[in-house]
Image (cartoon, rainbow, N blue to C red; front, top):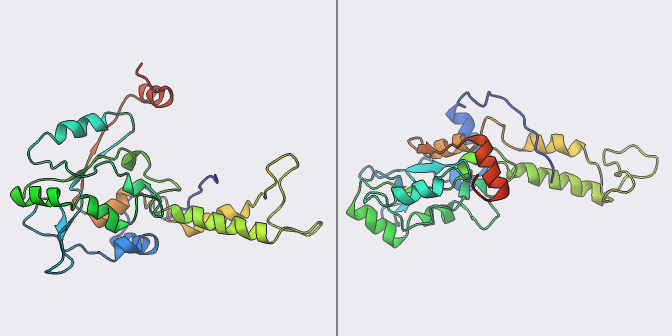
Length: 242
């Protein structure tokens, strides 16, 4: 798997202008961009909207329970959904934000459908102050990774570049960016130049998952679960408590 390199036009700690964030969403997630801005229903505490007067209500989470992994997110979600104003008849662990758009996680329509089932909408109708939640811990752990919903373009660009090397193998003695690997390797090509091409094709490091999510949902609340690092790594790698 190619290691991801990143280009930065802003510090990752400096909020990007809205126009820049919208441009990134339009390029990488056109299915999301097509819905913006969301005409939210003011009568509901959770972000819900209709495309038109006769369409079905569609909803998104009002808050995230965001990682890190093995930090108690599942336990916190179990406790939260015991509250009468936290509906729980939806898939709160879809990991949609950290999955490739061509994965089983699906597109934006698929994600909104997880929060718009009949039982969930009935709960919101009965208690408009209810808050829907997404408890996928990877949403915090993988704020920037090559397989994310936005940064998959890195993989696509690298793959296209590497395929060019395979389709046009370098000739003996002729200079080529697609140099053969050394003898004894997997028989592929170095294709070092593909890293730069892939980096230029993806979103900058400053446009990470929180920037993406808050572009869509400016009022989003995030509960971050942390844990002593050494203990968390041990559990993650060894699968058991210390």
